[in-house]
Image (cartoon, rainbow, N blue to C red; front, side, top):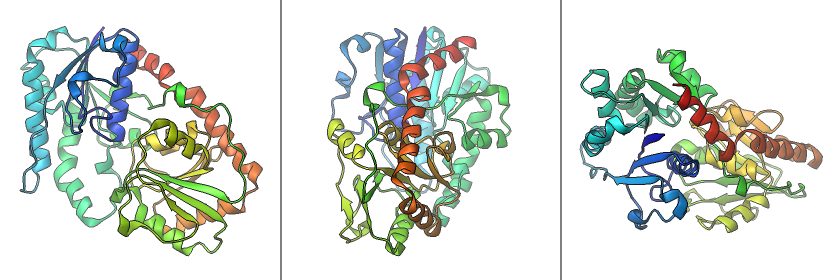
Length: 379
């Protein structure tokens, strides 16, 4: 099988949940001897020509095609215009190879021009699928400015690309509901979750002890709900807990308190996983999401989770594995954390055990890749 994987970057050349998903998809396709034309770009200091984050055996099946993203402009809407231009540059880079692909998998706007040409019957090629991470532009926005961007810039092209593609990929949960609401035929939707490598999945949970240790993992981004989380933390009267932040949090978003700890960005895997394992409950209070790697990785390390009911979070978080809250508000976040503090350690441990078991059963890439290949073969 020969697949074109067209993506807006792969981890760690480009950071982000979408990029990490692309990296693992490419990695495990190659491990299963599927030929992959990887179309991507670089925004890091790593030498992208080396593909040093793949094994030598994996690299035998990966053909890297680098198509740089155009430089940002200053006028409103420049990201959307550059995304369309980028999709045209990608099309030109692979146009002569289109007939060799058995399937074309595109992320975000990268396949915009190709899907447009196929829909207009100007080209002949294999079925083309599209994946917009969490269709965040159709989820709730954290402020009015972002809401306007969603409504007037992003929703229309995303809806058109999704309708014109042969296949639309979803993580499941509320993301599938959004896709259906756009008028996409249910037969076109393929639900495949994201996952983790089995090598990072811990064997046993760490028993909960006093004080309970909470964790926020990720970079600062408005939609991640740090402002609301900070308000909640200031209001909680019971201070018998620790809260650990891992990620590049700006100084003006940090709270000075004896029970709050800021570790900064940690890229070294073992150090990161060791710190995660010392915590008990991940807090992911986002306004919008796809299927967050932070939840997957926290559960794989034996943590229970507090999360908002957005994106595909409800595929992972429920009464067995944590606490699902309906909205990103300071009150609901405070209420959830306070509820955890009243729980018996054994109750928290049971949720941690269920979370770990769920990851082992359904969310490891070594299993997910066969689900993906079976779906593609069935087309």
